[in-house]
Structure formats: structure tokens, C-alpha cells
Amino acid sequence: MKIVNVIGSPRSGGNSATITQVLLESLGKTETQVKTFGLNKLNYRGCQGCMACKTTSDKCIVKDDLSQVLEEIQLADLVLIASPVYFGDITAQTKGLIDRFYSYYSPDYKTNPNPSRLASGKKLVFILPQGNPDGKAFEDIIIKYTRIFGRLGFTEIYPIRALGVGPGDDIRTKETLVQFIKDTADQIAGGKRNIKDK
Ligand SMILES: Cc1cc2nc3c(=O)[nH]c(=O)nc-3n(C[C@H](O)[C@H](O)[C@H](O)COP(=O)(O)O)c2cc1C
Image (tube, rainbow, N blue to C red; front, side):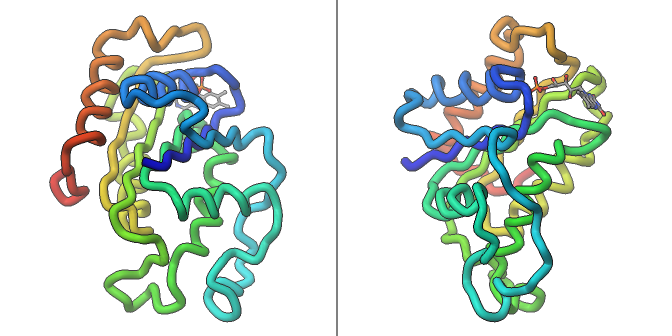
């Protein structure tokens, strides 16, 4: 299984990174078996709206540090995208990447029932820690991006939220959360959970 791990938090070793680590450990994967990208360390621009990916090219023509990330995701079976909630949404670093996912849409994406250039069968884990302990707060982020990722062609989408966690917290001591991460790993490894079931 080819795995790409994208960290959208600027805090290296923060909650986003720890959750991805626990998940990868639960999947029995070592660091060398995973391509990890810390977005904050990369130089890139968001989508330029040039429409080249809908006219002259089947890829994003912007050449920067995201070019490799976009290619690796295209080759991956499992993609992890981890972002803390910043001001009610994902971080700017993560949004910059997702805007470039526009290049995964085929030219006829508006009318085509299969609008994505991504091969079907890809799994995605969307990891979203937040300081607010209320699960109702920022639930909209999960709903919105699950739809977007589904339309982009990810077949199975697994959200992992961590509520009420901040810089001083150690994710590994949160038993319920760790159990949820392990259960998610089990589902990824063996189960089929369609986004329509959620
Ligand atoms: C600039 C900034 C904005 C934030 N905005 C929110 C927010 O709107 N809602 C919330 O619940 N937490 C918010 N937080 C808290 C983070 O989501 C939380 O600390 C998270 O666990 C950080 O994850 P990390 O360790 O992976 O960076 C914010 C933190 C920062 C630094």
C-alpha cells in the first residue's frame, strides 16, 4: 500500500503530526514506508486559476514544491491530510494544497458523473484537531471537505477529529481518541466504508 502523509500544521511534532503517527503505527507502517510532506517547509503557491489543467495539460503546470506532492498523491493508495482548525477552517498551508487539487478534475468535470482524473479506490484520512472541546463546533469543516474529497475521486474517506486539544496536550494520553484512531486503522486495513454510509 503506497501511503502519502501530508501535515498542514506549522507545528512540527504537534497534534496533527502525532495523530498521523499513531495511525501509521496502528497500520504497522514505519516512516520509511510512508512519504511525508510537512507543507509548512515547502515553497508553493495556491491555484493560479490559469485553466491550463482544463485545456493544454492533464496536470497542474505550476512548478513548485507542490508538484511532487500532487504527483505522489496521484500514485498513492492511502492519503493522510492533517490540519488543525485555524479560525474555523483548515490552515492556509492545507488550503493552498487543496486548491491545487483542482488539477485532478477532468476538463468536463462540471457535467461528467466521474469528474476526477484520480484512479478510483483511493482512501483518504482527514485529520482535524481543534482547541474547542465542543464537537458541534467546526463540524461543518468535516462535512464540507468530505464532499469535496469525494467529488475529487477519493472512494473511502475517514475523518478523525481531536476535540479540545492544544499545544500542551499529548495525544497519546487521550485513550478514547487513540482507540478511535486504532479503529480507523482497522477499517482502512480491512473494511469498506463508503462516504455514502456516513
Ligand atoms: C492561529 C490559530 C487559530 C486557531 N483557531 C482555532 C479555531 O478557530 N477553533 C479551535 O477550536 N481551535 C483553534 N486553534 C487551536 C488549534 O486548532 C489547536 O491548538 C490544535 O490542536 C493545533 O494542532 P497542531 O498541534 O497540529 O498544530 C487555533 C490555533 C491557532 C494557532
